[in-house]
Image 1 (cartoon, rainbow, N blue to C red):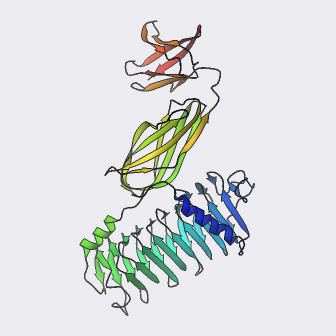
Image 2 (image 1 turned 120 degrees about the vertical axis):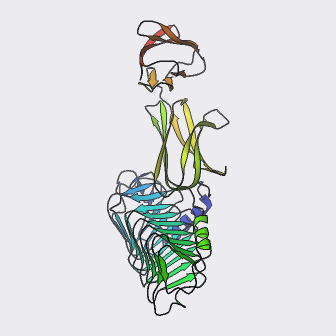
Image 3 (image 1 turned 60 degrees about the vertical axis):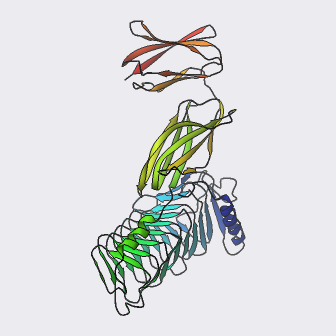
Length: 451
C-alpha cells in the first residue's frame, strides 16, 4: 500500500518544468487555488499562482498549461488541443459525471492523481499521457485510444465499457500496473505488458491483425476469449505473456497459464486512491470531515485524528470501517463535536488489513467566534448518543436535566477550563427535557428532545 502523503519533492520538479516550458510556446498557465468547478470564474483559478484571476481555462484548451493542485469537477465536455500541458498532483482528482467526454489531442499529461470521467479519447498521434505511481484513470463508459502514447507506471486504469487501442496508438504498462476493462479489449496498435503488470477484461481480449502484444506480463479474460488474429500469430503476440481465457483462445503462441496470469493480476496491490478530503467548521461549533476514495485495496479502516491548539499529541475522534478492496467510489463522513477555540488540525490514518498505516494530508479549521448563546448539538438527539453544550463560559458551574414533570434525571458540575460540556443520553429515555445551565450566578434553560 502506497502512502497517501503527497510526494512534494516530485511535484516541485514537475512544477519547475512547467515554469520552464512557459518560455517555450505555452501562452498561459492556469493553477488551481481551491477545490471547485472547472468553469468557476470567481476563486478557483489563478494565472500567477497566487491571486484569483476571475477566469477559467474554458472548454477548448489550446496553448495552455493546466496545473491542478485541488479537486476539480467538470460539468461540460472538454477538449485539450495543441501545445497544452496538464499536471495533476497526487491525491487530487479531475472528475466529471458519466456522460462527460474528455478529448485529448496534441497535448502532454503528467498524472500523479486521478482522472474520473465518462469517456476519455486520445484523438491524435501527438498525445503523450504519463500516468505515474499512485495515479488512476477511471471511465464510467469508454477508454479509446485513436492515437498517441500512454505509459502507465505503477498505476491503474479502469474502463466500465469497451477499450480500443488504434493502429496509431501505443499503450505501455510497467512496474506493476493494471488495466481493467469491464467489457471487451481490442488492440489494433502496440500493447506492451511488462513483467508484473496485467490487462484484465471481462469480455474478449482481441489482438487484431497487424497489431502487436509485447512483454512478459499477464493478460486475462474472465468471461471471454483471448484471441490473436492472423497472419503472424507467432510474432505479433509475445510468447512471454502468461494468459488465461475464461471462454477459450485463438492463435496464441503458448498454452494458457491461468495460475500465473491470475496470480499476477490478483497480486497487484493498488493504492487507496483519495479523491477528496475536506474539513469544514459548521456554525462555529462543530467540524464536519468528509473524504472519498476512488478505489481501495486491502483497506481495513480509517482513524480520524485531530490536534487542538495548545496540545502536543494527536487524539482519535473515531474509527470508520473501510470497504476492503473495491474499484467503486466510496464517500465517508465524520463529525468532531468537541471543537475548542483556536486552530484544530485534522488528518486521516488509513490502516490495511495487515496493520500497515498510511497518512493523509493535514487540514485545519480556526474557531474564533463563540457566539452569544449556548448551543446544544445534536438536538434532537438519539438515545445512546453524546450531546454537546457549546459556547459555555470558562468558569465553574452546574449542568442539570429535568423531565416535563420536574424530576431531576442528570446533574453534574461543569469544569472551569472548558467552553463545552458533554452529556450522554444512554440513561435518558425518549422525550422532551429541560437543561439548566448555571454559571457565573446566571441560569439559562434549553430544550432537549431525545428520540
